[in-house]
Amino acid sequence: MITIKVANEFSRYPAGRFTKDGPYSGEHFRNKFLLPAIQKEDRVIVELDGARGYGSSFLEEAFGGLVRLGVLKEVIKRKLEIRATNLSLKQEIEEYISNANPA
Image 1: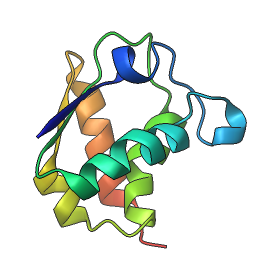
Image 2 (image 1 turned 135 degrees about the vertical axis):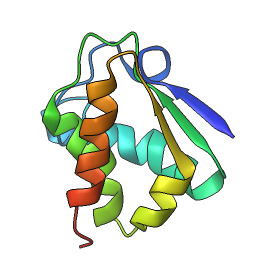
Image 3 (image 1 turned 30 degrees about the horizontal axis):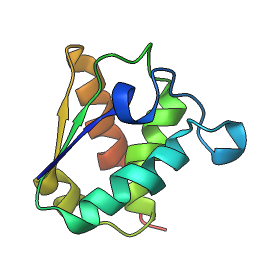
């Protein structure tokens, strides 16, 4: 099991969809933190509290992007746990995963 605390380990100011949008984009978070953890660990906890906010483009690319990279939705749902005081963030991420289509 691994816990990824976004604000502590990545950035308090995550923003943007793609790496070209800045160093703290959803693409960068997915590729550097989330995807390796999903591939290696049985359980991945992502703690969202502490960051200054999350744009929809960041969240969609980070989490929905897993599906586009070939990670099965069932695997994501089994391995991934989102922790956040703001429960709407968890629901938003679940929707991005459900609505994403494999590439």
